[in-house]
Image (cartoon, rainbow, N blue to C red; front, side, top):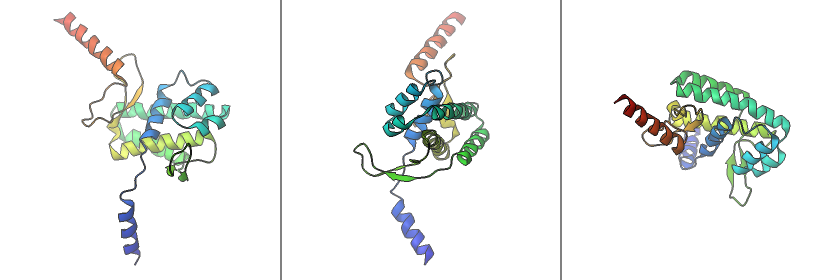
Length: 192
């Protein structure tokens, strides 16, 4: 009897998914705003910019300190991925998952229909940590650790998510890609 119930539930839930991409993108923003994210106002702006207005209103200096610490740990995840060290990526993410356990909750806010959030209670930093870590874990388990990277355009060290169909992304933005291509072209011309 239990097997039948599980099969029905499994079949029913197949069409239901939680898109964790926005959470993974939050992790990228945290890593890339290393120099900008130094004040409580900057944290509140980032949260509001990503649609987390309630969290922005509740953010404290303690949250900022915890998020800055998290940012350093997330940077390590992206650096390991960029170096092709998948085992280290997984080890780092597993450590973060243990420290920031997931507490899913149904939420409806800002005129949106019911949807899942990973954490609503607790400190803002807890919500940001859980979302960022789960988002990256989802990318790694669903697409592979090679979908996380650090921009290859010197001196940029921004993180990126590679969501391209052919896993070809090497730069954080079109600007860095163009700059790297121009530099490579000029180097070829000098050496010719």
